[in-house]
Image 1 (cartoon, rainbow, N blue to C red):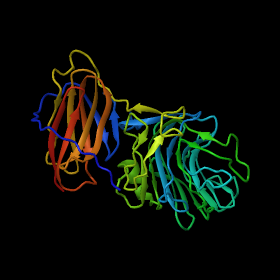
Image 2: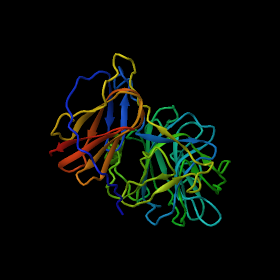
Image 3: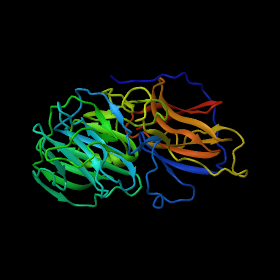
Image 4: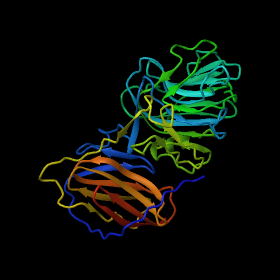
Length: 391
């Protein structure tokens, strides 16, 4: 079921004004990126996250998504943005199921102690296959074509795909880094939760490394899961543009843009909402919300005199346009795009922002022609503008 949220919007007339202290966002259909004031895109190659992400402590933190029949086993794609330093042990990113006496772990994507990306498959006989090193129960052949190191304390986009023929591929930042043929078949004896940030259970045979619970020490954002194997070009698009919530086979997409609370909403049409920790209520296993690091230089000469939301430019547009807003003081804000029925389409900026002027770039590549509303919410005001997408 597709979930929508309806808002009552206040119309506002906005005019252009002089840009004082600008900071630029690069925004994919869901993601928000920020370029530090005075930096070039090359200098700020690190992806700084979306409106918010989740910080996992590497001790007991996790996100739990209750089991659903839509969860894939043999044929799948999983992806996420991650940021971590070199882990002391194995660091699970996303795991399909938990290995115990009754069920099997179908697959999991994780980082090994050397800082390299790896995927494990477990079959119905509890044999574990670790790729691309193929150093658990050997099966198939693999070729490593690029650097698999991701533990450099920078945002990295990671993904794994496996098709019905057993062909598996690992991707980092939209590029294929390893491929395997004739891989083990993930078990379908799996009716358990999806875990983000940890793996539970005893791994084996052969016996897996201890401890059997692998926790992720760092930041995870925008994990997603498909019941199809995406092609190389599609993975590149997910990295560069973002996850399309209505893409074929998408059965889970958690943008982690809530910023507060226990629930992580699934933005796919599958409706697989999850929650922080081991239980739906607050517990010690809850990861922490971390707002995107967005701020503007706050000095008397560049502080705006009024809160403003400018007319987007260009307008009409196709497919991108800039939306500028100004804050007179440090504020908790949300900059949101709605369709004309009041349904939320995108969150372009969210959280605590310093006084200053900001520009968000809205990318409507995957949206239809029509009028859209954009709204700036602060603690004291709500300003709204209208823009027109023509394709």
